[in-house]
Amino acid sequence: MSRKIAMIGAGSVVFCKTLMSDILATPALADSEFALMSPTESKLRRMEAFANRMIADNNLPAKAWATTSREDAIRDADFVVVMIQVGGFHAYGVDYEIPLKYGVDQCIGDTLGPGGVFRGQRHIPVLVDIAKDMERLAKPGAVMLQYANPMAANCLALGRVSNVPFVGLCHGVQTTLDLVAGYCNVPKAEIDFTCGGINHMDWFLTLSHKGRDLYPELRDMFERPEYYKNEKVRGEVFRQFGYFMTESTGHLSEYVPWFRHRKDALALYCDEPAFGGESGAYYKWGKAMAEKYEKVDPLQFESTAIDGRSVEYCSYILEGIVTGNPFKFMGNVRNDGYISNLPQGCCVEVPTIADANGLHPQAIGNLPPQCAALCQTNINVQSLCADAALSGDPEHLVHALALDPLTAAVCTLREIREMTQEMLTELRPYLPQFEGKSLKQTPTISIPADCVAVDVPLDPALAIGKRFGTLIEQKVD
Image (cartoon, rainbow, N blue to C red; front, side, top):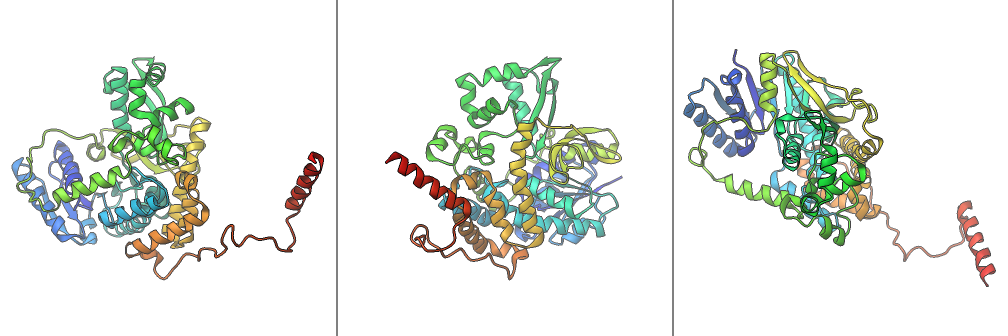
């Protein structure tokens, strides 16, 4: 039976093409109906033309059609795949360039930090509306496969407001296993592992090959300069926290306070090009790719041959649900006790099974306390990011960035408020939840100019401190 798959954000030619190719390469899904939706007519029509060419060239029974109406795309859908980027590269540029003025240097800027928080403000309201559309229009039990960043904040917000089955998808675990397999010289398919945490901060709790623990070998690798050099940030966190995680240097350096807060630290740990830590790497790459494909006719730009599936989970999950053959993957879901020492209701990334009865996240118990504590620093920001987007209270933007590990390592609270105001002003066209609302004004007191001695009551602790200091001075004299 043909399944209807709504592709929301189908103007993303490269990623949409990858997911469609994966689905069409799956025999159980080869007759799918694709409803391609994007608000940008020109991009949408190019993707529609390419999709139909791919279907025809591979002689498949599928069909694809395009619409700018999200409701039409979602109506009677079995699956809704979300890959939106609200505001495009204009908004992404703001996410990167304004924080850089305040000393917050981001490599990727789509998950945490000022870039992640403001991307969440653009995406969470749209995701909530998509979930509401699914409740009204999609088939009962229709599943949302959510690819938009910031993954954890987006899914945390969805888990608060909707009962629509959803899972957030990322490829960090798959690609990290490629790295481990290469380092330890074992086939990736033969690695047994237990993994859990939050998106972009998943911890490999166990790693083994045919009963042999791979951790001693991996630890030895990261004491060798030729291995450590490639992944300085991930390697250093591994050495200090004891567990290997899913994020490369470029990503991970943004989620912690230790590597991008000073020029010397940045030069030491994030000196590899591109996603090895380079400033603005993903924004520059993404903009270049967008410009490359902006005016390309998809009927001419590349082969449409379907020759297998990518590492993306999407097609395998759909196949598991449609055929009933279980597929196990790492999914981002609401934490309903799956990780015991992370907050209920946050978003966790845990082993999940897709089968004919839907999605089944698996409990993994406690993370090591140091790993849970590092995850918690990111969850604090994700939660406040969701609070801001769902409530429309712009003060929560300040709160979120005040608790962001990298921003807090670089900026004062006053600077954080000023940066937030500047970003909010520039990005307001994409943020309807803040319409008619403003941040409180930056305090007018100037430090140190206005902080002169006056005759006012002192905090008792301050008074004691001053008296104690005087006594010490007298003793010294």
